[in-house]
Image (cartoon, rainbow over all chains, first blue to last red; front, side, top):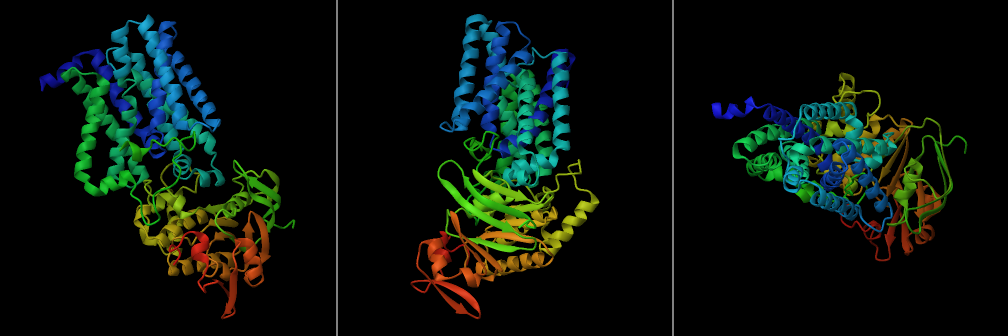
Length: 304
Length: 262
Protein backbone atom coordinates (compact mmCIF):
# COMPACT_ATOMS: atom_id res chain seq x y z
CA UNK A 1 0.00 0.00 0.00
CA UNK A 2 2.78 2.36 0.97
CA UNK A 3 4.40 1.77 -2.34
CA UNK A 4 1.25 2.94 -4.08
CA UNK A 5 0.99 6.06 -1.92
CA UNK A 6 4.65 6.93 -2.06
CA UNK A 7 4.55 9.11 -5.16
CA UNK A 8 1.89 11.32 -3.57
CA UNK A 9 4.64 12.81 -1.41
CA UNK A 10 5.95 14.61 -4.45
CA UNK A 11 4.28 17.83 -5.53
CA UNK A 12 5.15 17.21 -9.17
CA UNK A 13 3.34 13.87 -9.05
CA UNK A 14 0.26 15.35 -7.41
CA UNK A 15 0.15 18.06 -10.06
CA UNK A 16 0.69 15.50 -12.78
CA UNK A 17 -2.02 13.25 -11.44
CA UNK A 18 -4.60 16.03 -11.27
CA UNK A 19 -3.68 17.19 -14.77
CA UNK A 20 -3.75 13.65 -16.19
CA UNK A 21 -7.14 12.90 -14.65
CA UNK A 22 -8.61 16.18 -15.82
CA UNK A 23 -6.99 15.84 -19.24
CA UNK A 24 -8.43 12.33 -19.55
CA UNK A 25 -11.89 13.59 -18.64
CA UNK A 26 -11.62 16.56 -21.00
CA UNK A 27 -10.45 14.47 -23.95
CA UNK A 28 -13.04 11.81 -23.13
CA UNK A 29 -15.81 14.40 -23.22
CA UNK A 30 -14.72 16.09 -26.45
CA UNK A 31 -13.78 12.72 -27.93
CA UNK A 32 -17.47 11.83 -28.15
CA UNK A 33 -17.98 14.60 -30.70
CA UNK A 34 -14.64 13.97 -32.35
CA UNK A 35 -15.35 10.30 -33.03
CA UNK A 36 -19.00 10.69 -33.97
CA UNK A 37 -18.16 13.44 -36.44
CA UNK A 38 -15.34 11.47 -37.97
CA UNK A 39 -12.88 14.13 -36.79
CA UNK A 40 -10.31 11.80 -35.23
CA UNK A 41 -7.82 12.69 -37.87
CA UNK A 42 -8.35 16.39 -37.22
CA UNK A 43 -7.49 15.84 -33.55
CA UNK A 44 -4.38 13.96 -34.58
CA UNK A 45 -3.44 16.65 -37.10
CA UNK A 46 -4.07 19.55 -34.73
CA UNK A 47 -1.74 18.15 -32.10
CA UNK A 48 1.00 17.72 -34.69
CA UNK A 49 0.48 21.22 -36.02
CA UNK A 50 0.61 22.65 -32.53
CA UNK A 51 3.91 20.85 -31.94
CA UNK A 52 5.46 22.96 -34.69
CA UNK A 53 4.25 26.06 -32.90
CA UNK A 54 5.50 24.80 -29.56
CA UNK A 55 8.97 24.21 -30.99
CA UNK A 56 9.03 27.57 -32.72
CA UNK A 57 7.94 29.43 -29.60
CA UNK A 58 10.60 27.60 -27.56
CA UNK A 59 13.26 28.68 -30.03
CA UNK A 60 12.25 32.34 -30.08
CA UNK A 61 11.34 32.32 -26.35
CA UNK A 62 7.67 33.15 -26.70
CA UNK A 63 5.14 31.79 -24.19
CA UNK A 64 4.30 28.18 -25.10
CA UNK A 65 0.53 28.59 -25.03
CA UNK A 66 0.57 31.83 -27.00
CA UNK A 67 2.96 30.62 -29.68
CA UNK A 68 1.54 27.13 -30.05
CA UNK A 69 -2.01 28.46 -29.93
CA UNK A 70 -1.46 30.98 -32.71
CA UNK A 71 0.38 28.39 -34.75
CA UNK A 72 -2.46 25.90 -34.33
CA UNK A 73 -4.98 28.52 -35.39
CA UNK A 74 -2.92 29.39 -38.46
CA UNK A 75 -2.68 25.69 -39.38
CA UNK A 76 -6.44 25.23 -39.02
CA UNK A 77 -7.03 28.23 -41.31
CA UNK A 78 -4.52 26.90 -43.82
CA UNK A 79 -6.27 23.51 -43.86
CA UNK A 80 -9.61 25.22 -44.42
CA UNK A 81 -8.15 27.27 -47.24
CA UNK A 82 -6.58 24.34 -49.04
CA UNK A 83 -9.74 22.28 -48.67
CA UNK A 84 -11.86 25.01 -50.21
CA UNK A 85 -9.92 24.68 -53.45
CA UNK A 86 -11.81 21.37 -53.72
CA UNK A 87 -9.07 19.70 -55.69
CA UNK A 88 -7.59 18.35 -52.50
CA UNK A 89 -9.61 16.41 -49.94
CA UNK A 90 -9.67 17.63 -46.35
CA UNK A 91 -7.81 14.56 -45.13
CA UNK A 92 -4.99 15.18 -47.59
CA UNK A 93 -4.93 18.89 -46.69
CA UNK A 94 -4.62 17.98 -43.02
CA UNK A 95 -1.86 15.55 -43.90
CA UNK A 96 0.14 18.17 -45.78
CA UNK A 97 -0.22 21.10 -43.40
CA UNK A 98 0.15 19.29 -40.11
CA UNK A 99 3.03 17.02 -41.04
CA UNK A 100 4.84 20.00 -42.55
CA UNK A 101 4.28 21.90 -39.32
CA UNK A 102 5.43 18.90 -37.31
CA UNK A 103 8.53 18.52 -39.48
CA UNK A 104 9.35 22.18 -39.04
CA UNK A 105 9.03 21.77 -35.29
CA UNK A 106 11.39 18.81 -35.39
CA UNK A 107 13.89 20.71 -37.50
CA UNK A 108 13.80 23.70 -35.15
CA UNK A 109 14.32 21.52 -32.09
CA UNK A 110 17.13 19.59 -33.77
CA UNK A 111 18.87 22.79 -34.69
CA UNK A 112 18.26 24.94 -31.64
CA UNK A 113 16.73 22.91 -28.83
CA UNK A 114 18.10 20.68 -26.10
CA UNK A 115 17.18 17.95 -28.46
CA UNK A 116 16.62 14.60 -26.77
CA UNK A 117 14.98 15.60 -23.57
CA UNK A 118 12.59 18.22 -24.82
CA UNK A 119 11.71 16.16 -27.86
CA UNK A 120 10.77 13.07 -25.88
CA UNK A 121 8.71 15.13 -23.49
CA UNK A 122 6.88 16.90 -26.29
CA UNK A 123 6.18 13.76 -28.26
CA UNK A 124 5.22 11.34 -25.55
CA UNK A 125 4.22 13.47 -22.60
CA UNK A 126 5.96 14.12 -19.32
CA UNK A 127 4.78 15.02 -15.87
CA UNK A 128 8.07 16.57 -14.89
CA UNK A 129 7.29 19.85 -16.54
CA UNK A 130 3.82 20.22 -15.04
CA UNK A 131 3.50 23.35 -12.95
CA UNK A 132 0.70 24.63 -10.75
CA UNK A 133 -0.25 27.00 -13.58
CA UNK A 134 -0.75 24.03 -15.89
CA UNK A 135 -3.06 22.42 -13.34
CA UNK A 136 -5.20 25.52 -13.21
CA UNK A 137 -5.19 25.84 -16.98
CA UNK A 138 -6.37 22.27 -17.57
CA UNK A 139 -8.98 22.69 -14.84
CA UNK A 140 -10.24 25.90 -16.43
CA UNK A 141 -10.45 24.35 -19.90
CA UNK A 142 -12.26 21.32 -18.48
CA UNK A 143 -14.81 23.54 -16.76
CA UNK A 144 -15.21 25.54 -19.98
CA UNK A 145 -15.78 22.37 -21.98
CA UNK A 146 -18.39 21.11 -19.54
CA UNK A 147 -20.19 24.45 -19.62
CA UNK A 148 -20.20 24.51 -23.44
CA UNK A 149 -21.37 20.90 -23.72
CA UNK A 150 -24.15 21.37 -21.15
CA UNK A 151 -25.35 24.76 -22.39
CA UNK A 152 -25.13 23.79 -26.05
CA UNK A 153 -26.19 20.19 -25.60
CA UNK A 154 -29.02 20.05 -28.11
CA UNK A 155 -27.52 22.23 -30.88
CA UNK A 156 -24.27 20.25 -30.56
CA UNK A 157 -26.09 16.94 -30.73
CA UNK A 158 -28.32 18.01 -33.61
CA UNK A 159 -25.39 19.40 -35.62
CA UNK A 160 -23.30 16.30 -34.99
CA UNK A 161 -26.09 13.91 -35.94
CA UNK A 162 -27.73 15.67 -38.83
CA UNK A 163 -26.12 18.99 -39.86
CA UNK A 164 -28.37 19.73 -42.80
CA UNK A 165 -31.62 19.32 -40.92
CA UNK A 166 -30.15 21.14 -37.93
CA UNK A 167 -29.32 24.09 -40.16
CA UNK A 168 -32.85 24.35 -41.57
CA UNK A 169 -34.26 23.88 -38.10
CA UNK A 170 -32.64 27.12 -37.03
CA UNK A 171 -29.37 25.86 -35.53
CA UNK A 172 -26.39 27.98 -36.52
CA UNK A 173 -24.31 24.99 -37.46
CA UNK A 174 -21.31 26.96 -38.68
CA UNK A 175 -21.05 28.61 -35.27
CA UNK A 176 -21.50 25.30 -33.47
CA UNK A 177 -18.73 23.75 -35.58
CA UNK A 178 -16.43 26.71 -34.93
CA UNK A 179 -16.99 26.56 -31.17
CA UNK A 180 -16.29 22.85 -31.10
CA UNK A 181 -13.16 23.24 -33.20
CA UNK A 182 -11.87 26.06 -30.99
CA UNK A 183 -12.60 24.03 -27.87
CA UNK A 184 -10.76 21.06 -29.33
CA UNK A 185 -7.73 23.20 -30.16
CA UNK A 186 -7.65 24.70 -26.67
CA UNK A 187 -8.03 21.26 -25.09
CA UNK A 188 -5.15 19.84 -27.13
CA UNK A 189 -3.01 22.81 -26.24
CA UNK A 190 -3.76 22.49 -22.53
CA UNK A 191 -3.21 18.73 -22.31
CA UNK A 192 -0.27 18.39 -24.67
CA UNK A 193 2.45 18.57 -22.01
CA UNK A 194 1.13 15.54 -20.16
CA UNK A 195 -0.28 13.48 -23.00
CA UNK A 196 2.27 14.24 -25.70
CA UNK A 197 1.77 15.17 -29.34
CA UNK A 198 1.76 11.67 -30.73
CA UNK A 199 -0.58 10.13 -28.20
CA UNK A 200 -3.16 12.83 -27.71
CA UNK A 201 -5.40 11.60 -30.52
CA UNK A 202 -5.69 8.23 -28.80
CA UNK A 203 -7.02 9.84 -25.63
CA UNK A 204 -9.65 11.56 -27.76
CA UNK A 205 -10.71 8.33 -29.42
CA UNK A 206 -10.33 5.44 -26.98
CA UNK A 207 -12.69 6.52 -24.14
CA UNK A 208 -15.39 7.48 -26.65
CA UNK A 209 -15.13 4.18 -28.47
CA UNK A 210 -15.31 2.23 -25.20
CA UNK A 211 -18.37 4.24 -24.13
CA UNK A 212 -19.97 3.66 -27.51
CA UNK A 213 -19.63 -0.08 -27.07
CA UNK A 214 -21.35 0.18 -23.69
CA UNK A 215 -24.35 2.32 -24.57
CA UNK A 216 -26.72 3.34 -27.33
CA UNK A 217 -27.72 6.61 -25.68
CA UNK A 218 -25.93 9.84 -26.50
CA UNK A 219 -26.35 11.34 -23.03
CA UNK A 220 -24.95 8.21 -21.38
CA UNK A 221 -22.10 8.05 -23.87
CA UNK A 222 -21.09 11.59 -22.91
CA UNK A 223 -20.69 10.98 -19.18
CA UNK A 224 -19.34 7.46 -19.61
CA UNK A 225 -16.63 8.62 -21.99
CA UNK A 226 -15.69 11.44 -19.60
CA UNK A 227 -15.50 9.05 -16.65
CA UNK A 228 -13.50 6.46 -18.61
CA UNK A 229 -11.10 9.16 -19.79
CA UNK A 230 -10.60 10.39 -16.22
CA UNK A 231 -10.02 6.85 -14.94
CA UNK A 232 -7.49 6.14 -17.69
CA UNK A 233 -5.69 9.38 -16.83
CA UNK A 234 -5.57 8.54 -13.12
CA UNK A 235 -4.53 4.91 -13.47
CA UNK A 236 -2.15 5.67 -16.33
CA UNK A 237 -0.36 8.37 -14.39
CA UNK A 238 0.20 6.04 -11.45
CA UNK A 239 1.44 3.35 -13.82
CA UNK A 240 3.74 5.88 -15.42
CA UNK A 241 5.44 6.50 -12.07
CA UNK A 242 5.74 2.92 -10.95
CA UNK A 243 6.78 1.45 -14.28
CA UNK A 244 8.92 4.43 -15.22
CA UNK A 245 7.36 4.97 -18.63
CA UNK A 246 6.22 8.20 -20.25
CA UNK A 247 2.87 9.48 -18.99
CA UNK A 248 1.22 9.67 -22.42
CA UNK A 249 2.17 6.09 -23.23
CA UNK A 250 0.93 4.82 -19.86
CA UNK A 251 -2.44 6.57 -20.19
CA UNK A 252 -2.97 5.30 -23.72
CA UNK A 253 -1.96 1.76 -22.76
CA UNK A 254 -4.41 1.75 -19.86
CA UNK A 255 -7.12 2.95 -22.26
CA UNK A 256 -6.20 0.37 -24.86
CA UNK A 257 -6.32 -2.37 -22.25
CA UNK A 258 -9.77 -1.20 -21.13
CA UNK A 259 -10.82 -1.19 -24.77
CA UNK A 260 -9.61 -4.77 -25.19
CA UNK A 261 -11.48 -5.92 -22.09
CA UNK A 262 -14.74 -4.21 -23.11
CA UNK A 263 -14.34 -5.41 -26.67
CA UNK A 264 -13.96 -8.99 -25.49
CA UNK A 265 -16.73 -8.90 -22.90
CA UNK A 266 -19.46 -6.99 -24.73
CA UNK A 267 -19.16 -9.44 -27.62
CA UNK A 268 -20.81 -8.93 -30.94
CA UNK A 269 -23.38 -6.49 -29.60
CA UNK A 270 -20.90 -3.86 -28.48
CA UNK A 271 -18.79 -4.30 -31.56
CA UNK A 272 -21.80 -3.80 -33.79
CA UNK A 273 -22.56 -0.54 -31.98
CA UNK A 274 -19.09 0.80 -32.47
CA UNK A 275 -18.79 -0.37 -36.04
CA UNK A 276 -22.12 0.75 -37.37
CA UNK A 277 -23.22 -2.41 -39.09
CA UNK A 278 -25.23 -1.81 -42.23
CA UNK A 279 -28.91 -2.41 -41.70
CA UNK A 280 -31.72 -2.95 -44.13
CA UNK A 281 -31.30 0.56 -45.49
CA UNK A 282 -27.82 -0.20 -46.61
CA UNK A 283 -24.70 1.15 -44.97
CA UNK A 284 -24.89 4.28 -42.90
CA UNK A 285 -24.03 6.34 -45.89
CA UNK A 286 -24.16 9.86 -44.57
CA UNK A 287 -21.05 11.76 -45.49
CA UNK A 288 -18.84 11.82 -42.46
CA UNK A 289 -18.63 15.36 -41.49
CA UNK A 290 -15.97 17.36 -39.83
CA UNK A 291 -16.38 21.08 -40.13
CA UNK A 292 -14.10 20.72 -43.11
CA UNK A 293 -16.73 18.77 -44.97
CA UNK A 294 -16.59 15.45 -46.75
CA UNK A 295 -13.20 13.89 -46.96
CA UNK A 296 -12.47 14.00 -43.24
CA UNK A 297 -13.22 10.36 -43.22
CA UNK A 298 -11.06 8.88 -40.54
CA UNK A 299 -14.02 8.48 -38.25
CA UNK A 300 -15.06 6.07 -35.59
CA UNK A 301 -15.46 3.22 -38.02
CA UNK A 302 -11.99 3.57 -39.41
CA UNK A 303 -10.29 3.90 -36.09
CA UNK A 304 -11.78 0.84 -34.41
CA UNK B 1 -49.77 34.29 -55.20
CA UNK B 2 -49.16 36.65 -52.30
CA UNK B 3 -50.88 34.21 -49.97
CA UNK B 4 -48.41 31.39 -50.70
CA UNK B 5 -46.32 29.98 -47.84
CA UNK B 6 -43.35 29.69 -50.17
CA UNK B 7 -43.07 31.00 -53.71
CA UNK B 8 -40.32 30.05 -56.15
CA UNK B 9 -39.92 32.36 -59.10
CA UNK B 10 -37.72 31.17 -61.98
CA UNK B 11 -35.36 29.44 -59.62
CA UNK B 12 -32.22 27.78 -60.96
CA UNK B 13 -30.06 25.72 -58.61
CA UNK B 14 -26.69 24.10 -59.16
CA UNK B 15 -24.05 22.48 -56.99
CA UNK B 16 -20.73 22.41 -58.78
CA UNK B 17 -21.41 21.69 -62.40
CA UNK B 18 -24.51 21.80 -64.55
CA UNK B 19 -27.75 23.14 -63.06
CA UNK B 20 -29.89 20.53 -61.29
CA UNK B 21 -33.04 22.63 -61.27
CA UNK B 22 -33.72 25.13 -64.04
CA UNK B 23 -36.22 27.95 -64.10
CA UNK B 24 -38.61 26.45 -61.59
CA UNK B 25 -41.67 28.52 -60.74
CA UNK B 26 -43.80 27.05 -58.01
CA UNK B 27 -46.01 28.25 -55.19
CA UNK B 28 -46.89 26.28 -52.08
CA UNK B 29 -50.27 27.49 -50.81
CA UNK B 30 -51.43 27.07 -47.20
CA UNK B 31 -53.00 23.64 -46.86
CA UNK B 32 -51.34 22.31 -50.02
CA UNK B 33 -50.52 18.61 -50.33
CA UNK B 34 -48.05 18.29 -53.16
CA UNK B 35 -46.00 15.37 -54.47
CA UNK B 36 -42.89 16.02 -56.53
CA UNK B 37 -42.23 13.20 -59.00
CA UNK B 38 -39.55 12.58 -61.58
CA UNK B 39 -36.71 10.22 -62.42
CA UNK B 40 -33.52 9.85 -60.37
CA UNK B 41 -31.27 12.88 -60.72
CA UNK B 42 -34.19 15.04 -61.90
CA UNK B 43 -33.65 17.55 -59.10
CA UNK B 44 -36.50 16.50 -56.81
CA UNK B 45 -34.49 16.75 -53.63
CA UNK B 46 -32.88 19.98 -54.82
CA UNK B 47 -36.28 21.48 -55.46
CA UNK B 48 -37.27 20.45 -51.95
CA UNK B 49 -34.11 22.10 -50.62
CA UNK B 50 -34.90 25.28 -52.51
CA UNK B 51 -38.37 25.38 -50.92
CA UNK B 52 -36.77 24.67 -47.56
CA UNK B 53 -34.14 27.35 -48.00
CA UNK B 54 -31.16 25.09 -47.43
CA UNK B 55 -29.74 25.82 -50.86
CA UNK B 56 -29.21 29.28 -52.27
CA UNK B 57 -30.47 29.48 -55.86
CA UNK B 58 -28.03 30.51 -58.54
CA UNK B 59 -30.72 32.71 -60.00
CA UNK B 60 -34.38 33.45 -59.37
CA UNK B 61 -36.06 34.26 -56.09
CA UNK B 62 -37.59 32.31 -53.24
CA UNK B 63 -40.11 34.20 -51.14
CA UNK B 64 -41.04 32.72 -47.80
CA UNK B 65 -43.90 33.97 -45.66
CA UNK B 66 -42.32 35.77 -42.69
CA UNK B 67 -42.22 33.63 -39.56
CA UNK B 68 -43.05 30.45 -41.45
CA UNK B 69 -42.23 27.33 -39.43
CA UNK B 70 -40.92 24.61 -41.73
CA UNK B 71 -39.77 21.11 -40.86
CA UNK B 72 -37.82 18.64 -42.94
CA UNK B 73 -37.82 14.85 -42.89
CA UNK B 74 -34.69 13.57 -44.66
CA UNK B 75 -34.43 10.38 -46.65
CA UNK B 76 -33.88 7.46 -44.29
CA UNK B 77 -30.85 6.34 -46.19
CA UNK B 78 -29.02 9.58 -45.40
CA UNK B 79 -29.34 8.92 -41.65
CA UNK B 80 -26.29 7.68 -39.73
CA UNK B 81 -27.83 4.61 -38.10
CA UNK B 82 -24.81 3.81 -36.00
CA UNK B 83 -25.10 7.14 -34.18
CA UNK B 84 -25.83 6.59 -30.49
CA UNK B 85 -29.26 8.13 -30.05
CA UNK B 86 -32.49 6.76 -28.68
CA UNK B 87 -35.89 7.53 -30.17
CA UNK B 88 -36.65 10.15 -27.52
CA UNK B 89 -33.23 11.80 -27.93
CA UNK B 90 -33.75 12.01 -31.68
CA UNK B 91 -37.16 13.62 -31.39
CA UNK B 92 -36.00 16.10 -28.75
CA UNK B 93 -33.14 17.35 -30.94
CA UNK B 94 -35.67 19.51 -32.74
CA UNK B 95 -36.31 21.52 -29.55
CA UNK B 96 -33.13 23.58 -29.70
CA UNK B 97 -34.59 26.87 -28.62
CA UNK B 98 -35.60 27.95 -25.17
CA UNK B 99 -34.43 25.27 -22.79
CA UNK B 100 -30.78 25.37 -21.82
CA UNK B 101 -30.45 22.08 -19.94
CA UNK B 102 -29.60 18.84 -21.72
CA UNK B 103 -32.37 16.84 -20.06
CA UNK B 104 -35.97 17.42 -21.10
CA UNK B 105 -38.52 19.21 -18.93
CA UNK B 106 -41.60 17.34 -17.71
CA UNK B 107 -43.59 19.30 -20.27
CA UNK B 108 -41.27 18.25 -23.10
CA UNK B 109 -41.34 14.64 -22.00
CA UNK B 110 -45.14 14.70 -22.05
CA UNK B 111 -45.17 16.34 -25.47
CA UNK B 112 -42.77 13.77 -26.95
CA UNK B 113 -44.65 10.87 -25.49
CA UNK B 114 -47.99 12.17 -26.81
CA UNK B 115 -46.49 12.64 -30.24
CA UNK B 116 -44.97 9.16 -30.29
CA UNK B 117 -48.26 7.67 -29.09
CA UNK B 118 -50.06 9.40 -31.88
CA UNK B 119 -47.62 7.97 -34.40
CA UNK B 120 -48.02 4.50 -32.92
CA UNK B 121 -44.47 4.17 -31.57
CA UNK B 122 -45.14 5.24 -27.98
CA UNK B 123 -43.53 2.19 -26.43
CA UNK B 124 -40.23 2.63 -28.25
CA UNK B 125 -38.98 5.85 -26.62
CA UNK B 126 -35.80 4.41 -25.15
CA UNK B 127 -34.90 2.16 -28.09
CA UNK B 128 -31.90 2.89 -30.27
CA UNK B 129 -32.96 4.15 -33.70
CA UNK B 130 -31.46 1.15 -35.47
CA UNK B 131 -33.54 -1.29 -33.44
CA UNK B 132 -36.68 -0.26 -35.31
CA UNK B 133 -38.39 -1.32 -38.51
CA UNK B 134 -38.22 0.97 -41.55
CA UNK B 135 -41.72 2.25 -40.89
CA UNK B 136 -40.98 2.98 -37.26
CA UNK B 137 -37.77 4.77 -38.22
CA UNK B 138 -39.73 6.93 -40.65
CA UNK B 139 -42.13 7.82 -37.86
CA UNK B 140 -39.32 8.83 -35.50
CA UNK B 141 -38.09 11.42 -37.99
CA UNK B 142 -41.66 12.51 -38.67
CA UNK B 143 -42.10 12.98 -34.93
CA UNK B 144 -38.93 15.07 -34.78
CA UNK B 145 -40.29 17.26 -37.56
CA UNK B 146 -43.70 17.58 -35.91
CA UNK B 147 -42.28 18.57 -32.52
CA UNK B 148 -41.45 21.96 -34.03
CA UNK B 149 -45.17 22.39 -34.84
CA UNK B 150 -44.53 23.31 -38.48
CA UNK B 151 -46.96 24.98 -40.83
CA UNK B 152 -45.17 23.35 -43.73
CA UNK B 153 -43.56 19.93 -43.64
CA UNK B 154 -41.22 18.70 -46.38
CA UNK B 155 -40.42 15.01 -46.77
CA UNK B 156 -37.79 13.47 -49.02
CA UNK B 157 -38.95 10.04 -50.23
CA UNK B 158 -40.94 9.20 -47.12
CA UNK B 159 -41.96 5.81 -48.46
CA UNK B 160 -38.68 4.59 -49.93
CA UNK B 161 -37.65 1.35 -48.28
CA UNK B 162 -40.87 0.77 -46.32
CA UNK B 163 -43.46 -1.95 -46.78
CA UNK B 164 -46.93 -1.51 -48.25
CA UNK B 165 -48.67 -1.21 -44.93
CA UNK B 166 -46.29 1.44 -43.67
CA UNK B 167 -46.74 3.31 -46.93
CA UNK B 168 -50.47 3.36 -46.31
CA UNK B 169 -49.95 4.46 -42.72
CA UNK B 170 -47.58 7.26 -43.67
CA UNK B 171 -49.91 8.47 -46.42
CA UNK B 172 -52.84 8.34 -44.03
CA UNK B 173 -51.01 10.23 -41.33
CA UNK B 174 -49.86 12.93 -43.75
CA UNK B 175 -53.47 13.21 -44.96
CA UNK B 176 -54.60 13.71 -41.37
CA UNK B 177 -51.97 16.39 -40.74
CA UNK B 178 -52.98 18.07 -43.97
CA UNK B 179 -56.64 18.02 -42.88
CA UNK B 180 -55.54 19.83 -39.74
CA UNK B 181 -54.13 22.59 -41.93
CA UNK B 182 -50.49 21.62 -42.33
CA UNK B 183 -49.07 22.04 -45.82
CA UNK B 184 -47.23 18.92 -47.00
CA UNK B 185 -44.68 18.66 -49.80
CA UNK B 186 -42.96 15.35 -50.52
CA UNK B 187 -40.88 13.73 -53.21
CA UNK B 188 -41.62 10.21 -54.37
CA UNK B 189 -40.54 7.66 -56.92
CA UNK B 190 -43.66 5.65 -56.43
CA UNK B 191 -46.18 6.73 -59.04
CA UNK B 192 -48.91 4.20 -58.30
CA UNK B 193 -48.49 3.58 -54.62
CA UNK B 194 -47.97 7.18 -53.57
CA UNK B 195 -48.27 9.86 -56.23
CA UNK B 196 -51.63 8.75 -57.61
CA UNK B 197 -53.16 9.17 -54.14
CA UNK B 198 -52.06 12.78 -53.65
CA UNK B 199 -54.26 15.75 -54.50
CA UNK B 200 -51.57 17.53 -56.47
CA UNK B 201 -48.42 16.54 -58.34
CA UNK B 202 -45.47 18.40 -59.80
CA UNK B 203 -43.55 16.52 -62.50
CA UNK B 204 -39.92 17.54 -62.73
CA UNK B 205 -36.97 16.67 -64.85
CA UNK B 206 -34.55 19.51 -64.18
CA UNK B 207 -37.35 21.86 -65.27
CA UNK B 208 -40.91 21.72 -63.99
CA UNK B 209 -42.75 19.76 -66.69
CA UNK B 210 -46.32 19.84 -65.42
CA UNK B 211 -48.38 20.52 -62.38
CA UNK B 212 -51.90 19.37 -61.55
CA UNK B 213 -54.02 16.57 -60.12
CA UNK B 214 -52.92 12.97 -60.78
CA UNK B 215 -55.60 12.75 -63.49
CA UNK B 216 -54.15 15.79 -65.19
CA UNK B 217 -50.48 14.93 -65.07
CA UNK B 218 -50.31 11.14 -64.97
CA UNK B 219 -50.75 10.92 -68.72
CA UNK B 220 -48.56 9.19 -71.28
CA UNK B 221 -47.60 12.51 -72.79
CA UNK B 222 -46.48 14.20 -69.55
CA UNK B 223 -44.79 11.05 -68.27
CA UNK B 224 -42.83 10.62 -71.47
CA UNK B 225 -41.57 14.18 -71.17
CA UNK B 226 -40.75 13.64 -67.50
CA UNK B 227 -39.13 10.23 -67.67
CA UNK B 228 -38.04 10.07 -71.28
CA UNK B 229 -39.70 6.67 -71.56
CA UNK B 230 -42.97 5.55 -73.10
CA UNK B 231 -45.45 4.72 -70.35
CA UNK B 232 -49.03 3.65 -70.60
CA UNK B 233 -51.71 4.94 -68.23
CA UNK B 234 -54.79 2.88 -67.43
CA UNK B 235 -57.61 3.69 -65.11
CA UNK B 236 -58.56 1.39 -62.30
CA UNK B 237 -61.26 2.22 -59.75
CA UNK B 238 -61.19 5.85 -60.80
CA UNK B 239 -57.43 6.06 -60.25
CA UNK B 240 -54.72 6.35 -62.88
CA UNK B 241 -52.36 3.36 -62.98
CA UNK B 242 -49.05 3.79 -64.78
CA UNK B 243 -47.63 0.82 -66.71
CA UNK B 244 -44.64 0.44 -68.94
CA UNK B 245 -44.67 -1.33 -72.30
CA UNK B 246 -44.47 -4.71 -70.71
CA UNK B 247 -47.45 -4.10 -68.47
CA UNK B 248 -45.23 -3.72 -65.42
CA UNK B 249 -45.63 -0.85 -62.93
CA UNK B 250 -42.78 1.50 -63.69
CA UNK B 251 -41.71 2.66 -60.27
CA UNK B 252 -39.17 -0.11 -59.82
CA UNK B 253 -36.96 0.43 -62.81
CA UNK B 254 -37.47 4.15 -63.10
CA UNK B 255 -36.43 4.79 -59.57
CA UNK B 256 -33.39 2.59 -59.47
CA UNK B 257 -34.56 1.41 -56.05
CA UNK B 258 -35.99 -1.81 -57.27
CA UNK B 259 -37.43 -4.04 -54.63
CA UNK B 260 -37.32 -1.37 -51.94
CA UNK B 261 -40.81 -0.02 -52.16
CA UNK B 262 -42.78 -3.22 -52.34
